Image 1: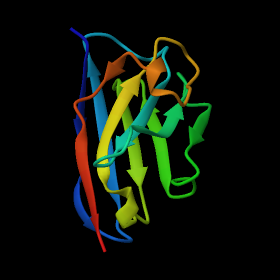
Image 2: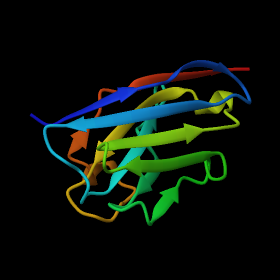
Image 3: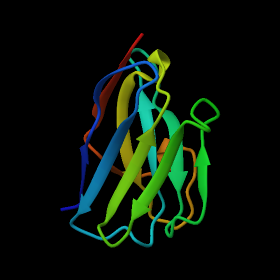
Length: 124
């Protein structure tokens, strides 16, 4: 069984930082692109960031560019999202996801594997 298990998240004040982790089990994703998405209440799931299989290529939503950093450690089969300078509008449930191809895309439909989601709340 393929599992993506997320950790991190929580409550932080505006301007603060959080780090999300996503550990894969059941198979290795070292040859696959991975990404982060988020969903705020009443809104559709939104692309946040994606990273290629070897970490050599990344892409970010304009809303998080310069504040968030996606990274991966293939030896640990783990994906990360470092979030700095957090804003109240970053409040959402964050999901990690994995693709079947090596190069990341921004569409949630391209990701067949998903983590359980973790709440991030940024207070003003």
